Length: 510
Image 1 (cartoon, rainbow, N blue to C red):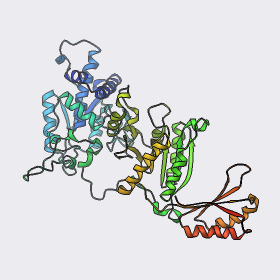
Image 2 (cartoon, helix red, strand yellow):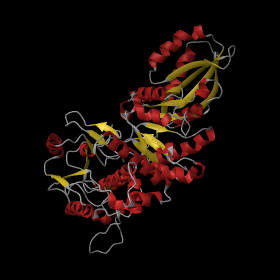
Image 3 (cartoon, rainbow, N blue to C red):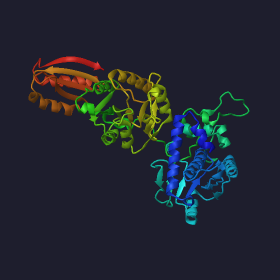
Image 4 (cartoon, rainbow, N blue to C red):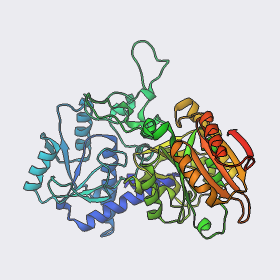
């Protein structure tokens, strides 16, 4: 069978893995349902073209397990094919669909109703129980689906089968070009994701800027470098709800205008006392230096649910959450999966991130699938910087740091600052001002006056600590307003005898 031979003869290990997984899903479906009970929804697009040829190969291999044919032509492709014909479809899509049907001897069930009504009528008049769909992660309808997913409530009852659910844009084109099969001609004219004639234009990222004035020309779809932008050629409909941004949430609504951040450390080694966490201390100081208040530093175990619970709790209470530790390929590296669960999304392959990993650690990877490239679906933004070998991961208001020590944090923080100055990643404010005093007074002597001071200056942080059990007491003031901070310190001094406090250091603007 030409498709199977082409893929198995390829040097693309990733494509082979994707192919084998899709074929397994197809063969599994053919084992669960009779051929009369399955159908294939074809729409002429690149994804359904891939699935059509996968079904041909999958059915061929499924039959080969039962008997050994003498020729490929001994096995005919019998899966019922449904085509929803629409007046708003591109003429090229219709033409390509009918050409495929003629070339492969398909008997198309052509439906001219909307998808839901057409399915209702089809399922009532046929024994169909399952339908193969060319849905991929990233498609608007893919959220919440698995490779086998029952239809949604309110829809006619059938099993949705999604063999290419985990395929990326790169995988689709690798398959089409390796298999050397035909696809709709629109893809050679710069279209990367085709909807209706009313909402689809060529992808501007493929525009040939030096083209003649006779008309703008575009490179073919398979040359799009960032597959996440395949839908950039879809025109937004008027009245469409605004897209959720990856920026700060309610930054101006925090009391006193103070931006707050929380830090989550994932690591059993810290909870066991095997390792000292120095990154959290350093990160807190860095956040203070750009006017951010750290509301909490939490250490959680290497358990997905523990990470998810902490992220879910802190992401809504802070402008930004930083998380580090447990980022990698090991079974204990659960930070990214925990973030995904906190936002209620699945992890999905990110081909751009995988390309960075391939260049950075490709020779060290022994498996066909790089689990580190599985990122939270639909909410992930990659933070690129030339000094970073691999981009940082940002999921709405959660930033995943890859640092494993203070030196690595220094590099990542410098990049975050530069990105913030140019793109508004973090709001950079005036640094917090600090002042510290030591005193020989006892805690009980100070407690009442410090409580009053906290009420008088609610926008200042006033805290006490001892560096050792028998050491002197340190009183620490933090705030945004240097004059107010000095006034609070002077007010405290006036309550006690001269010389009761000794200024430890004047930190000023950190």
